[in-house]
Structure formats: structure tokens, C-alpha cells
Amino acid sequence: AAHTLAVVNCAAIPESLLEAELFGYSRGAFTGALQSYAGRIQAAHLGTLFLDEIGDMPLSLQPKLLRFLEQKELQRLGSSEVVRVDARIVSATNAHLLSLVREGKFREDLYYRLCGFPIDIPPLRDRSEDIAQLAAHFLEKCGSSLPAPQLSVQALQLLKTHPWAGNIRELQNVIERALILSADQAVIRPEHLMFADSSFRNAR
Image (tube, helix red, strand yellow):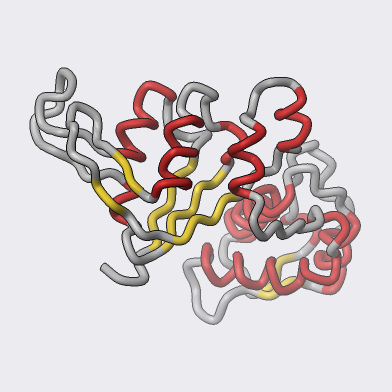
């Protein structure tokens, strides 16, 4: 359907399954393929395909992805039929792709094909002004009570001074743990904040 968003986390799907998940397969293409599957790329037709953690895409699959980006067409596993797909491609990674290119782990031609309009997002540790809004979002998203709990001034200050090696995912994990430790209290306090490095319960 138009405006569909299809998401693929290239790091979360085993290499042996990623090709089938992206490009689809025909019935009988391999053991267990009892029916045809269109694949995530075709599902994004007239919409957007988001390739998360593109830096973890296996080198063996990169030529096939490059062909799709260049030709806007694909073939399902086990099929000779060519399928045309018109989709916007958005990709993201926390890896330094040029370094991977130099190491021979990422194709240079694919890098430049994907890099049509690069957006460099600074790490969370360099965007402390965003932490309050992001934390409020996770409190609302992950909390079980309404209205969502609020951060105390001291808890927010603690979040702003944390180095956030794990970026947004680490912040979400900290908020989820805080909700559990606070037992859905109306205010999240510093003693509810447990960080991955175990430096928590800093202020009471």
C-alpha cells in the first residue's frame, strides 16, 4: 500500500535468513518454504524501506542490495521473475561505514549509493538538551499508569550528566528500569536510576 513503512534490522536477522526476509522467496525455494513470501523490500512498494544497522549487512548480500538500488528491481529466491519496486530507501548505522569500506567489510559502491543525503546525528552525550524530551517520551511509552510519571529535578540532572555510551537504547533501558524500581510512583527519583555500569543510586 502507498506510504507503507517496512523496517529491517540487518543486525537482528541471521545471515542465512536475511536474504529471504529482504527479497522474498517462492514456494519450494528451500526446505520449509511452504508458500511464497514477498519480502520486506516488495512490501515497501510506493512507501519507505528502513534498513537499520546497515553496517552489519553481510558482505555477500551487498551486491544484491546494490543491484536493487540501481535497477529498482529484484528476484525472489527460487524465482526467475523480475519484480519492479518503487520505494524510498532510508538506512541507519552506528558504525563508521568509511572505516568498514577501508577494511573491506563494506562495499564502496554501495556506501556511495546509500549516501545520497547523509544526516549525521551526534551521540546522545553531546545532546543533553534532548534528554528531558526523550525521557518523557519513554516514560509515556513504557509506563503503565496515566498520567505518566515525571522526573525529579535531581533525576533529570543525573541523566544529563551520564555519558550514554549506549545512546538512545541505553536511555530507554534506564527509563524502563526506573519505572520498575519506582513501582509506578508519580515521580522518578535518582535512586530509581540504574545504569549499565552499575553506578546508580547516586543520590537519595
